[in-house]
Amino acid sequence: MAASTLSQRAGVFLRTFRVFTSYKAVVPVICRCGAVLQSAGYNPKPLRLNLRDPYIPDKDDEKTPQWQKTAHYDRKLFGRYGSASGVDPASLWPSHAQLEDIIAEESQWHPPLEVMLKNIEAKAAEETAKRLAKEKLIAENMAKMPKMIKEWRQAKKESKKKLKEEKARKAKLLAEARERFGYAIDPRSPKFLEMVAEIEKEEKKKRKLLKRRLREEQVAALSSAPSSAPSSAPPAADDGADDPA
Image 1 (tube, rainbow, N blue to C red):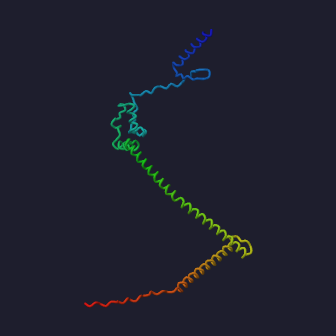
Image 2 (tube, rainbow, N blue to C red):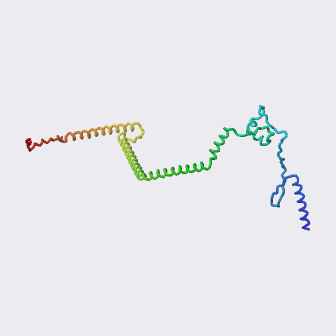
Image 3 (cartoon, rainbow, N blue to C red):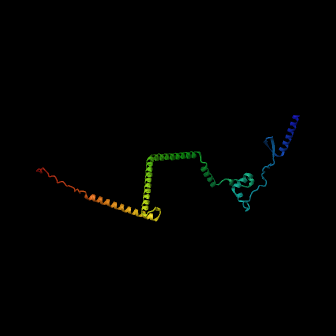
């Protein structure tokens, strides 16, 4: 009973498969229930060339598109229709100028093996020279590093010292302004700036007087030093008389 039922189902499946494959493309699809056949309704027709009456565009006609008047389209027509296209095969070859351009392009983008090896060697030599120069520069800078660190620390120390002196000077000026005016004054006010200008003028005058005094002391010290005159020794007398001839 089971065998007869299975044979009937197999016969129905084969008949259905023959019907579908007779006029449509069949694609098997696997699902949970098993294999299911799907038919594709699209069956494209083969491309047939009309060699009896091919389409050859008229290049002298204004209605003909420009892309159908190019050499590329002529090559396409000759490749499709052959001699029936009416295209001269000699005109399909590139001209001398085009050949030179093609050769130049090939030599630029597809150089021979020897040229490629030379380029690789030159590039490797250039990279080696750059690496050696960089290593030399690093070695020189590393040799200068202790001196540079020392100078940087000295400059930083001087900068801190100068900043500290500037803060102390500003605090001193503010205290002097408070003592002069009797109240705390803004360091950006014109009164404070005027007072600072006066103090700087007085300090400049004091420095000038001190410099003049030092110069006068140096001149006095030079003038008070004993002047030593050069001493000339008397000529020595001859002890012996001239011998008679």
